[in-house]
Picture 1 (tube, rainbow, N blue to C red):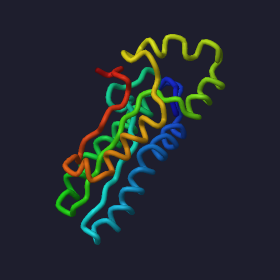
Picture 2 (tube, helix red, strand yellow):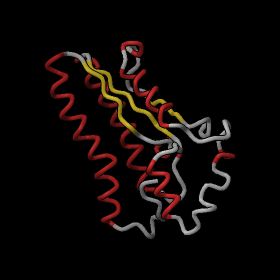
Picture 3 (cartoon, one colour):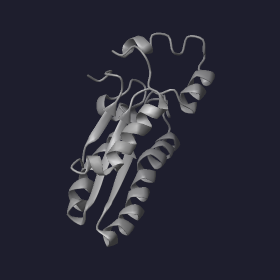
Length: 161
């Protein structure tokens, strides 16, 4: 998780940094990509949200809020720019085997127990593999998904089911 801290321990600088990276960065990417897509009357954007933006995450109010913002921005942009031939979707991954997870484990007070029970929380009894997320993004960006816009695909092994 990008920012795991109680709201009482979260500083204004933490807020600015997390919202700046997760939401503001996505805003600027969308703004500048759409400017080019509008002239072509076509294009697809696939934003990266998080399952934390769907169900909230204990100890991560700021991160959850920023990722929920990405989801709502995705929906609004899909409505605004569908008439321009632009589709906007997002993915909301759960826990995946990535360098960010490895860093969270390494930085944990007790790295040996950080992931204890994590896989058990998932109905599929495992965490995601990066290639599974990549395949979903590739599908959403493809012509096979030409009638999907404004939607967030949750890729979380069933944890939010």
